[in-house]
Amino acid sequence: MSKIELRLFTPGDVDWLVDAHARLYAQDEGFDATFGPLVRSILEDFFASHDPQQERGWLAHRSGTRLGSIFCVKGAPDRAKLRLFLIEPAARRTGLGKRLLAACMQHAENCGFKGMDLWTHESHRAACALYQKTGWHLIRSEPVHSFGQDLIEQSWCIDFPLAPTKTKA
Image (cartoon, rainbow, N blue to C red):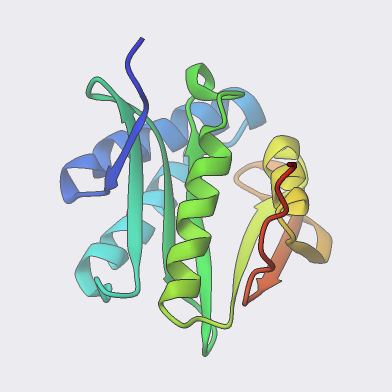
């Protein structure tokens, strides 16, 4: 089996990511048809006005098959925002999520951001566990009704510089 590779996200990937978000969130979370257009508007805004030095999106693929994405965009002053983190079911539990998250966080830190923020839902348990393991802190959790579902919305943050990762000898 070939290796999973990361490359920069391009406008040619937009339809795939919108479709993947709409499909997976409807299947896994019961989200309604309003979610796909939200993802499209986020991507349209990104390509219309992003700063390519500080803001980037990555696409994971294996032999041309798209498997996941993650984006680093400007957020609050001196902070980056993590967006559109998605892993296709076939690529879950392969370490791809850790790899995408590490690439995004390292990019943000290298660009001089003082930290990162993100918004998610409590039901994304694997992603939330990954955030916690990598030093993120849950700062807000509240019930909401979004995308046709009752959800627990969460905000997470991490400050830089990142502590060096300890390795076992």
